[in-house]
Structures are given as structure tokens and as C-alpha cells.
Image (tube, rainbow, N blue to C red):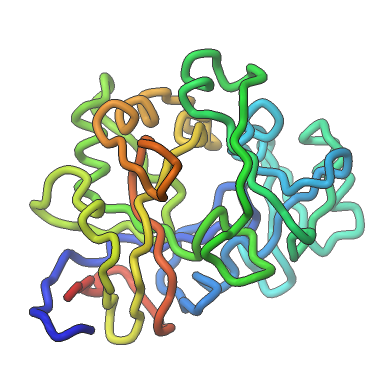
Length: 283
């Protein structure tokens, strides 16, 4: 840490990983975190054979169906459960064809992105206006600009989200609730009595989580259409995006313009193991 006073920001509330990009994931009792994020996180993705692009629910017209699948790690590969509960292993010879049939597009499971992989993101306001099934404009950026090469992260290896931000979104939402799973965090941090989008103020700071893990917070996380979509049994909820769009517009990177944000992206300065209950500190 630096030379300034160390401040306790909260404790780890929960830890999550998503073994297949844009599928539902799993909550962990503990996790090893390296420069490539939570071990096993976004280890696989689907390649759209027609376009040659990595499939992402950030393009909901094509890929919102991915959020009906759940992926968990096993000792024999990644176990993928379809929306109707049928399991398959990523190592099964017929896995690609089963997934292709379920998603209605020809896909191949891959463990590394193609050279020059790009992230296509439907403009969130357009999805709010026209619906998740509409063909809307997209923005294009480099996949994993702040992540190690060969990974499937949208931007950086870790995504942090606070209970303060979730509470603010829930209070401002017409139904008075929001589920953390909609924002796909790796770490939910219980910030106690803190209010609002408190993690906005962490950008540029170093965090120490538990005894070992040290992170650098990079930017606020711009939200796409994904929080609005059905996540397994959770129905769609447009207010999961509409609230940040109205109450927490931040410019994450120069030139992006103000974006609806919730959470922050971070990179790993020193690896470590984290568990729920670990203190989160900043200098």
C-alpha cells in the first residue's frame, strides 16, 4: 500500500466466476486470483462460425440466449447446463453441436480469442428504447484492452460491485429490488452504511483484499444491455440499466462520453486467495 492512512472500505460479501463468457456462473467459497483474474473465470467462450466473432450477450439480439445457460467448473472440464436442465461437458465430442442447436446459431467452444478480437456492444439507450430483440447500433472496441493477452474479459480481469451501489439502484427502481447477478460481478463488497455509487471514488486507488490480494482500480464499469435481460429464472428488468443511466453517468475513459455505470474494473498487482468476510482496504 502507499504511505497514506489505510481505510477499511468493507468486507467481501461474495465471490463469483463465469467459466464461459456470457453464461451464468457460480458462487465460490474462496478463490485464487492471479493476473488473469479469478482462476477459471471466462476460461471459455463461444465463437460464432458465421461472423468469426466471440459471442457476447452485449449483443442481445443475437446472444441473449446465452444467459439461460449455467457454467460451472469440474475436474473434467466445464459443466454447462442448458435452460431445460440438460447437462453437457465442454469436453464432450458433441458439445458444439448441442450448443449450436440450442442457440440457433453455429458456434464452437474456444479457449482463446481469435487474433484482433473485438467487443461489439449494442448501444444501451437504443436497447432500452427498442427492446432486446431489435437490431440497434453497436460500438466496437478491442476485447480486453486492460487484460492479459489471450483472455475473454470485456476490459479488465476483475469486476467489483458494492452493496451501496446495489442498494441505491434498488431504492430508485420501481420494484424496489435488483439482483447482483444482473451485473455479473466477480466480487461483491459489503460496504456497510456507505451510500450511493461509492466505488466511483475508488478509481486510481490500490485495494488490499484479505492478506495478500492487491488490486489497482482502473475505471468505472460502463453498463450495457445485459442487466436488463432475463438471467436464467430472473425475468428481464429494464430498470437495472435505466436507473444507472439516470443517476450515475460517468465517463470511464476519455472520449467515451458519459455512460451508465455501476461497479469498477480492476487489475491485479499481487495475486492472492480471497474469501467472503475478508477485509477490503485502501490507502
